[in-house]
Image (cartoon, rainbow, N blue to C red; front, side):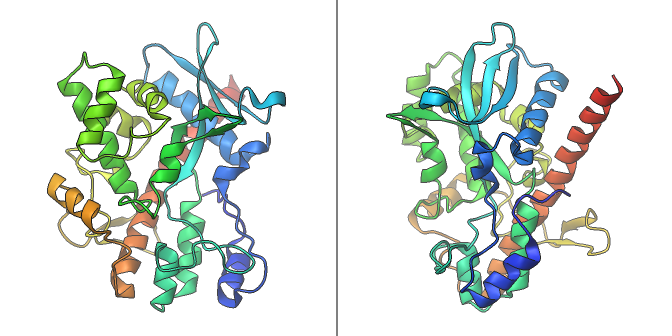
Length: 327
């Protein structure tokens, strides 16, 4: 796999010492570098989705750095494939939990963040370094459209689904909200976007509560159904065969260290239910964990699911590039 989070061994030394400047690289924030391998890989992946899935109303994707005046943001530009008119602008959003960083341990070191909590519970720092290395890969992020507010471009939902919210940066709860969106439009195909936002808010979802809600509607509607979204973005490791979302706090995944793709569940697969999600809205699950063993399993689950997703995406991108090179 290709890793985008910086050198693992240097980062481990930072976790162990905690005083020197960390070597961590946030892949999401490399959007300002036109040579960002991470964002260029994502563009190729999105192009594959459009061509192989034979999408209606085709979009094209290009990656751009900063533009003078910031009228168009740095990141992935989504355009109508025929008119080349701008449709949306995208940036990535890591779901492998925030990495502890900062010269004075200022970011994600406290108990409200899963890795910080794990280390406070005396969990091994080498495991944290491994998790962050493996989740800062092509399969470790969502993509969200940007909203232009004032002089800035940003994804409000990206900010709001963090540790201060019931979602706690969880990939499964985020997928659950996305599924709620698709279930709603499947039940009400003629419902306008504003009403969709209002109805989803009534269900307790954060997805369409903020200023970027209409951009998110445009983005998700392009993929029509939850199944098509999951299949397009290779989120199969996070769902069961009925496309129900696996609860990362109850799953027990394990892998063979020698053959990392040979992994499976030690117990029956537990999927999220509406009742359980409602309970998470009342009380955060990860932040309330008191033992390192349970939290370690959560972190391992996300790591393994991400690795499997990354292998699939990389396989698609490599095949696409080899085809282009031979064309």
